[in-house]
Length: 329
Image (cartoon, rainbow, N blue to C red):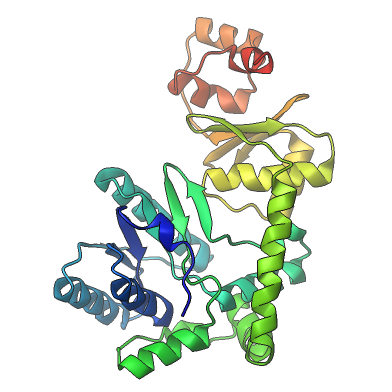
């Protein structure tokens, strides 16, 4: 079984996002076989009684194979359970990585996940960058997210575990078609993958290459957690830019949010991320509410810093004339 991105893991501190399901359990043992050093992190969302058994299994594996383990228990309630769980999960990973100095976060996304995402976005109406939502490597806040299984079918992982007689857990909520992703998986993704798996794998390789060519035309600039790119004054390209800028902050925009940003030109998304579209730049940063004295307000106003960004600019000690001087570089 061929894994991707392993060259980035050798000699680095790696953290595996573990769930005790087929994908992450298979990745755990595949990394062991390849002598890749890693530790694990698992979150119990309090949604299923079985989750306590999954955490216990993770603790057992960590002890047996001498791995550090980080656990978190939270209670998540509807609505938007999947989005809330993702936010909790990545905030937890961010904290561990920052405190413990990990270089890479390993996730067990596989080929079926790529296809499900593609079909979900296709049904919503999306361009190439949204259709191909996952890369083998993604840069995020001082570390990399690496997806070694991205071109491995789930059936291969299941077969691997069963051949090796390695236990794993099935999340029963994945069997319910009430979730949009599950509906796509059961009715379209799984049957299509079963019949055309090899062709799907080739197609995603080609699509990722096409996506890279498109993204190479977009130059992202950054300073601390301030991310910006040139305003192309073309809505299609600016949407692509917004995708990449917000991903730098670890947030995935919906199509509706992109349309709203283009319309508003300045504001805050999800109460956490500030944005501004000026004549020259498209800019995003963490949203910071900060009291300012009159002098600071006047300096920022004269420098034409958008109001939504002023709190972050001030708190991060970024010069008010940053964009004016950056233009001349």
